Image 1 (tube, rainbow, N blue to C red):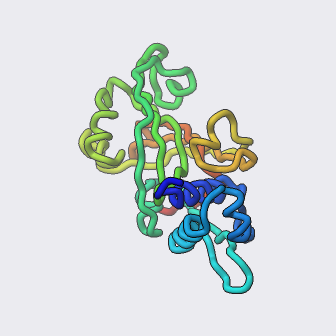
Image 2 (tube, rainbow, N blue to C red):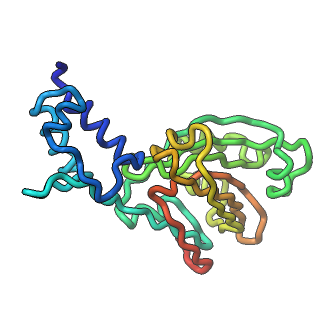
Length: 239
């Protein structure tokens, strides 16, 4: 038995909570049942459950048992100035992200149309995943005109935000020109990327950002977790 067995048990229970195997309100098996389930000692099981309770995943109710707590949903506002940090920072979520890949490619036909590019023009395609409090909320690809933003990815890594990168190119303000949202069943490795149950649907968001005069500067397609995100649309909101 490893000294950190309790951490392994904690991770397994947390994964089941985040994947929807253990839904909010579900009663956890009893301590003896967990001991048998994980082949671990009582101390390891008790410590894992206690730590999850401290982190807000579980509620230990004397005489009734241990229950899964509802995780807070993120209410993401889509307005005329839609920003990830602007949405989540005021709500107390710690926002982070990771670059999954960067390519310089000929613009796909639909991307070229949305960015007002000619056939054969190149774009910088940046694939990223965004997290709130360490949990994935979306992943997808954002496209920029390679002639206008040749080192967008490098500046994004150095500066930490898209808004800061635009400022470095002399763009002090930009708007959400278009947003299209539809729901569908999760496909392929999307549940694993979003840490949600395979039966939970995803929300696909296609967007275009523009300058104040309507000139497009970026278009994106992102897959969002329906397990932890809802959208509010307010065209007059600066979020």
